[in-house]
Image (cartoon, rainbow, N blue to C red; front, side):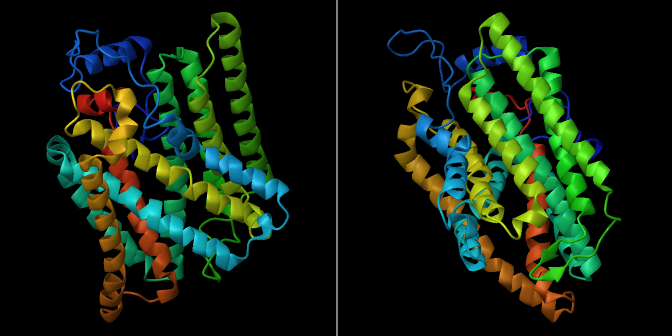
Length: 411
């Protein structure tokens, strides 16, 4: 994939985890200076005060801690662990919750990517055609997935594998973003070990998805693509992930002892939540069917990944449009109630819900053309195809070499 998208960027916000390491201290410092000298934030404020420091949060401490860093996930994990009956929510209740999070967060978070591509002239010019062509590829995968249960399994498992990468890469990138905002820089080896944590967790998830012979959708068993892996393969991947986490934790402990610098709490919470969801919950698929873990997963994914992305894209959109020169970035939460923000949210949710209403029409059209051989799997292949397109789009648009992105994210 890297050769297809040519991801030479060193900024990892929504990029492939195997791409090159992150910002060096010198680059991040230069980025901070670049931000301070940008049009939105002049070198000197009207009052004559020096240029403002980068804001340490994305939107607001409360919003960030609960929706970006995973506060709600740990709150619900506590409820699942200690509240009788909470960890045995029935299937219908789970589906209802999933539907609400899908309407409020999931579909709008996908549309936020396309709004970023086509609403910004520079991004539209650089990436608009690529994203449109990839939409054709995604639609082709949807059509192929409707031909048989085997191809539905291929498309569904492919999307699930990419979801591990996408979710982990996002948590990884935002964790580093908090570090850069607070001028907490990692050494070359610290970056490599942190990178290894993501790689090991990703490998654990992918081997589970590809080798799971019990995976079902709508009570229909999905075809196996490869023989189920021996237990030692999964155990080796689990050990590798645990060792990588321990190695990085040890390095961060040493950094605190030697440099008296502690990794920022938002960064720790963000990556810890990502590993908890994508390294633990999603790798307990068989057990989730008979335990409270499935309840926790619906809550965790719905209240972490998708609102996290909405927070980042909202922050970028607000900074990119009509930002008052005299207003420090620390006041960005106050802009959530501005006319600019209102227009952004109305546009985003109108696009999202229009997209949802068009999906059944497409299903009917494809069914009339005889392209859907297994209607019960339509939802799987449709959501999988659209998710893949979302993942590819993010890999294209969030790059460090785009100076506008750099200024808006770090500021």
